[in-house]
Image 1 (cartoon, rainbow, N blue to C red):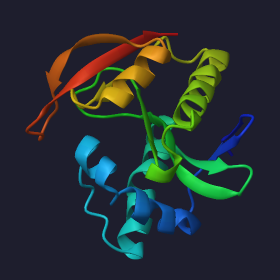
Image 2 (image 1 turned 45 degrees about the vertical axis):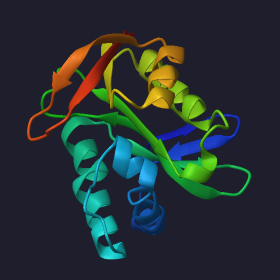
Image 3 (image 1 turned 90 degrees about the vertical axis):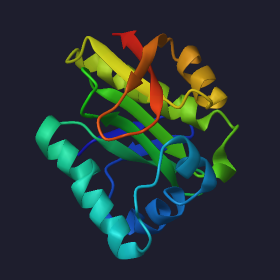
Length: 169
């Protein structure tokens, strides 16, 4: 079982019990604008997303997006972890929190804990990230996490170009 602990957060594998959070997160305006529409409209499709997204990535690659849980409330508040995506050479760090938890340093805390876990495992030498060019908050977070902006790229089957970032481990 994959679990990462920080001062304020626990990152753990997603379960079907997280479907309500997934449904809410994937339909928030900021998620839809900056990440995209994952076509999750009900609890059944949220469970399907968990099964065919993070849990499938875990079985195929040994890593995935994890559920971010706020320790003080024991509430699932978002996602953070590694993703393997077509069109990206190295594993990509991804993160998204429910909007009410933005601006509290929690995305940084979660992402830094994932990067620290990668460094300790010594299994990867490079991780990447992508970001919508107008998502200034995410661009600032990636800079704080010591990612370097590489270039603007087009991902397979997507209309808009995204910024590609990279960090050596």
